[in-house]
Image (cartoon, rainbow, N blue to C red):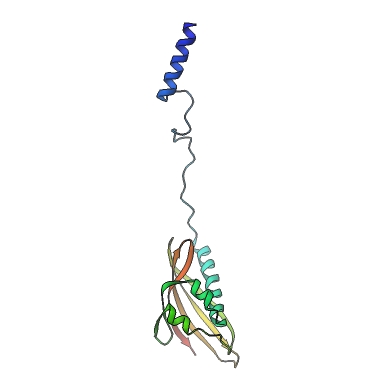
Length: 163
């Protein structure tokens, strides 16, 4: 009986002091799964995501859909147009109207110039074809910020390449 009592006391003391043969899964770091930071998106996936957004935004602008444009731009958005005129978000949205003369547009030469977890810069060529056959190109550079898990356009610079 004495040996059983001594063993129980020894076991209790080992438990209280944290001394035992089997490792404690909460305190033994060697058994813990490594804590990993969320995987950073690679350049190509960010480029695809932003390019899709650019196409949706350009389509919305051509259709005169200011709802999508307003939703995907920051409150302090600035637009520098091909004429050099700088506009705030509200000024730029006020000028959006359905383009009745536009036949088609395409985005080419997209390049993700830089990106991090919460910002990115993308440039591309916007190609426009009018119903009368005339066409033009502009180089566009957009600056993005990520807020609440969503990319938003903070600024856009447009430069006419050809008329």
